[in-house]
Image (cartoon, helix red, strand yellow):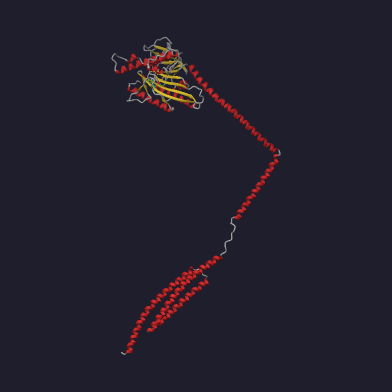
Length: 606
Ligand SMILES: Nc1ncnc2c1ncn2[C@@H]1O[C@H](COP(=O)(O)OP(=O)(O)OP(=O)(O)O)[C@@H](O)[C@H]1O
């Protein structure tokens, strides 16, 4: 092969190599170039978006950039084409120079675009500034509501003016009237009004005088009332005795017949009492008694309390008052005294009522003591029992409990009664054999008139035990312990009651007291000639109880110095259940609650 051919081949070979290298270089250049252009374009578009250019100027700038890019591409394409066609070294060098030039152009383009961006930014700021300078300053405008407000104010002013005008017109009318008859009329009205005012003032003053007088009258009436209570009590006597006959539902011939002393059916209220009965020898006996009042069937505790009321009042006014129930076991002492509506509750209620009624003028204080006298020993029932045993005290050593209310007082009494009953059970029914005493001390002080002397009254309520036949209790020479106890109790009771009966009778006539037994010693201070005593004799109409009934009635009559009289001679005994032709006035027994018997079955009152 010739040298030319070899060099030719070498050149072709080299040309190929150059071509390959060039191609790779070119494609890299193109890609870079395009990327750079693309980037520049994007920046341009962003800059345009944000700019505040005038449309025309913007279009011009964009199209300049676009033209530049287009030209750049075009020249690139030409150079590439030439580079590809030219395989020799010179071409290659030339091409490389072209590429280098292209790179510089590209750099220039970037600079141009950057500069463009800066320029556009500056422009936009400048334009904005110019614009801002050109914007005219706002001219102060009146507030939109001002006109309206002015209109409203004007309307109000107008209305006020109109009102003033009307008032002025009215004033003018009034002024014109004041000189006419109307003014006289109004003047008269004012005078009338003043007159009626002064009249009313006068009336008020008069009423004040009347009121003061009424208050004075009230005081006078209260004093008079107290005096009347005293007089009533005095009229009835300081010592009074009433009798309560227990209703029994048995045949009349099994009963003592109670009538008035004429032997007639008594009309309520009745006082003279005739007891007609068959004695143990089966003979008719009549006994006449003189009571203040006799209570038979149909007469309840309330009726009895009506007889006792003035005692409680009298105690509230500073007197010593004693109310005692005397009677055999089962005749109704507890029923009369300690029932819900009994004398104790009612009397205490009356005291508290009085304190309430007089609370504007008086201060009341109440003190309670509850005592039991059994076998001449004194027990304080307000003290709780110790070891099941009631507390024994010396006479005068009993508790004196200040009372707060009626309910509290009644509760204390209930507890004391229960303790009494408990002892009765243990001691073989000794309840009717002990004396049970409830005593209320009443202190009364005026809170309106300090010159009035305070008073202290006592209201003592006694449930006495009934006397028993001692001989009947002790049946043999060798009595059992129980019999001996009953005997001892009987003796003690009789001794106490004997002293008490004698003391009452003696004191009533100004005589001495018989303070042998604790019962009478206890009562010594409250049983004076000036003090009040009411004895309630409770009796059973059962014929089988005639001994105790007659004993009770006799004791009561003796105590007040009016012994029972044998009203009629003892007559022949009619056979029980057999009618008597001598039965002149057949009467029904007033204390029997049973069916009326035939006249012929009535006991003959000989
Ligand atoms: N006037 C009366 N009306 C209705 N029932 C009565 C009357 N009197 C007593 N009683 C009744 O007779 C019974 C015995 O009466 P009460 O307990 O009051 O007698 P007492 O005299 O207190 O007896 P003791 O001395 O044993 O305590 C009771 O059931 C009571 O309710």
